[in-house]
Image (cartoon, rainbow, N blue to C red):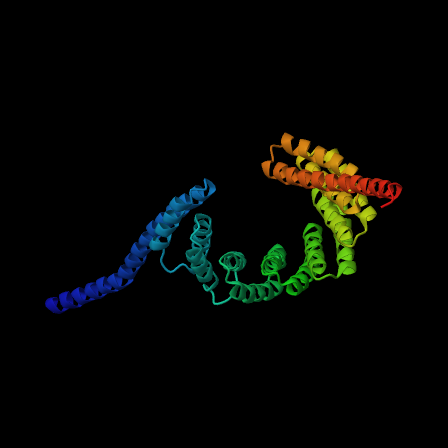
Length: 361
């Protein structure tokens, strides 16, 4: 009986020990995995922080290497991988490795199979910009249109990205000299900017639309868009941007041969720049006014404005501006000489003709 009791008690203790092992071993394994995961996350965090610091210092090759190390240490963390790929893509973009940057931006967007997180939307817009820079215009256009559609269904907090996507799309069409599509995209962008109460962007889109309309000889519509753009710049206090619109309007009137209106707008620009004491832009506007005077046939005032423009370009040490004004002054001198010579020749011809009559020829 004693041995039977001992056997029972031994079996009981063995069962209890086995039960403890079955409970303890998984817990130990879980703790070990947690420690490994924590150690790996610490490594990822350290390299990611290095990458962010180096990016702020604009040390792009070193930043790319740091993000590489962070991604290599990462395991089974889709959200973290998406963020790291976005930051590495941006560093690669700044480094000039555009194809690799596009690959990272694409991988960032593919994390959830669709655009879901803010960095994914930003990556989509950046990808469109890089495709444009690489001259892959058709691919860029298709991608940007898909991105805009996704942004229109996305969170309202990313409205600024939709505006930026339209700006890239407009720039793409302007670079390709596709004025009709540039006008359409600019008008869509203006409507989007208006919805999001972004007056500066709306004014920029309207100016872009006006430039396109002017290029296809739709002057009245272009003038209307310029006026709308100028009104918006006045509302937000965009003096320098408003001055550029005034110059565009003056150029439009100049092309139409409406010299007085062109001069009025350019004089208004000059007053703005004199108030801001911007000598470089004063020099440019003085040159523009001189060109209108030349078209008008007022060579005296044209010469006066060219001399003022040259003086201002010299003060700002703009050698390209000085060269342009100098060549125009030379051309103006030749024109003045021809006028004077033509007058003198006419007088001599009359004098010679009178002398011939007196001598009986």
